[in-house]
Amino acid sequence: MKILYYTSTTNGAGERLQEAIESVVQAENTEIYRNLESLIQRLRRPTQLWDVSILCTNSRADFLDLLSIRELLLNLRIILILPDDNAETITKGHTLFPRFLTYANSDFKDVAAVLKKMIQKTDSKQSI
Image (cartoon, rainbow, N blue to C red; front, top):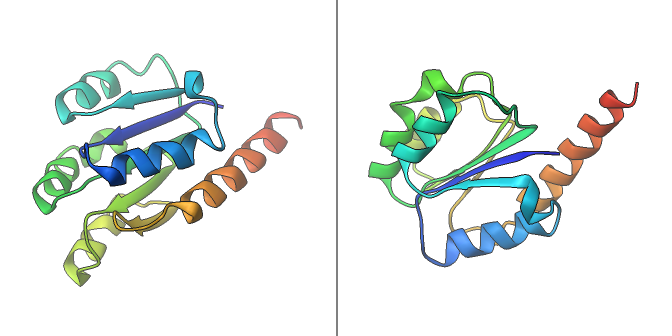
């Protein structure tokens, strides 16, 4: 199981989310990117396919920057963490076709549960 984790936040939300991810997936199976430039560089050299991508933005500006690279995210299974629950933000978030969507003020227990379920489905498909 390989996870791509992008977070534009260095506050408590990013730390809480990373803890939730690591409660399900070992840290060595997670590629972490903390700025958009490094994420773009990595997505442009797709030598590694990820089972799940977790994208977290803490501000509206960071979220809009992430939307600007939508074409690089099209084939990823995404868990998306939005900066707010504004109707416009949610609508724009859905253009990334996330498998699950939540907000930066979450405790991320739901993210861990969804990630675990996605891993189980991936593992069962690979064993067939």
